[in-house]
Length: 547
Image 1 (cartoon, rainbow, N blue to C red):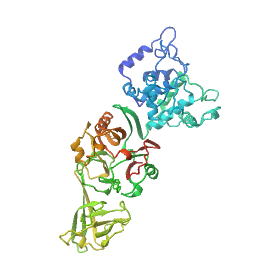
Image 2: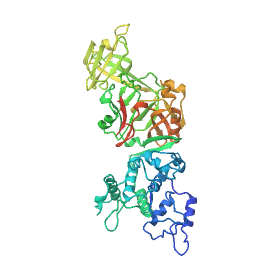
Image 3: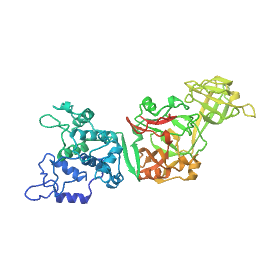
Image 4: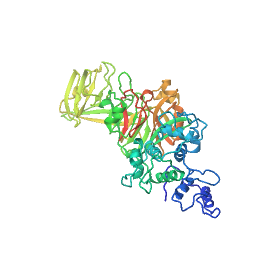
């Protein structure tokens, strides 16, 4: 039985029509209602399968014309009909980038979609030649472009074959022809040749595409390129349980800056997106970040209103708002305790007299980079190694430093006055307002734009999350965002639009919750060797990567 995964099954009415089409018409028994497709023809079942799917039509007067050539525009239209509804196709009825495909051309919607999504590239001179016959090798190229542009897979089932005319296959098509042959999509002719430059007949095209639909399978992710509410969107959808997620910092530090391409190359990311906002002068990120269960930075300024993308210990995604609280408990040799409250993580003290306790890890860098009034150096085993005063402190690779830059006016008797080498420190963490304490990854983003399956947010909620700049909250701009669908899949999406319309797009695409990411010159979206947007030249502070 054929298996098609991109559209719903046949409706009852279509089934009834098929029964009528199968009735003999005249002296010969035809496939469907095509008098020129006898049921014994080698391509008959493939033609009927595509007709059933609404992918291909006849040539008029109850004929299919199996031996007639198929045009390039017609083959692209077959592909497009598999992925888009008629209404979605109409969004592409405009003058695109090919000079010979005017908006009024019957194939313009399919050709424009295929060009926008990477299925076709044209002939290199600004033309596409939609009415020219499609060659057999170009069909293979388009099909493999479809595989790469959607994230699907075409498993090999046959050993590589050498066609007698293999040397005549164009260089740009050889890999595609080989992949299609190994997948059983193409078999060549009885004489051992392939005929790469030969015009494909309508029967050959139908057979090739029907076999392709039979043999392609879902990959670890699905790429979606289409226009939603008139806006061109590019997105990748995947199950987060199938990946290992982490926050990659620019060259490993919270103040680091690294090009998007370098991030991807260094981390081996399969999927990567720019993530949190960061301060352009210092490159310090805005918002709390947790990666691999380790807190990278705490920023409670707009908590708990500020929205974060969260993965719990089981890999389940959510959008949440919460504050991250830390305290350090010092235990001396005599059994006495001192509790340090309201400690933050990896935040540069604002002024020399700032007495806020801050825990610094190697995510910050090799040292504090400033003179601390008091600093306690602790190993990850909890044992105090050094107690320093009025100096910079090196941050151990296997530990951390708790410091205060200034001393409070009330004087001693607390954590820093009592700490001695050999004492122990226990750091306690609590996510106040979160639905779980088992947070594996969290990254503060915002503003939130979808909640409970509806568009969410206004000037008030945006401001509560710390966003007042109309360049972010009002105007159209290049944006990236993270959505969560009802089935728990994650969608990373980029589009040029405003926050409200972006929320409408995500709801239309089935997202129950969604949050905006840093955008503009920071927008980058990478999927498995392909940049859906970018790479841009601006260095980033961090990227959210899935491996």
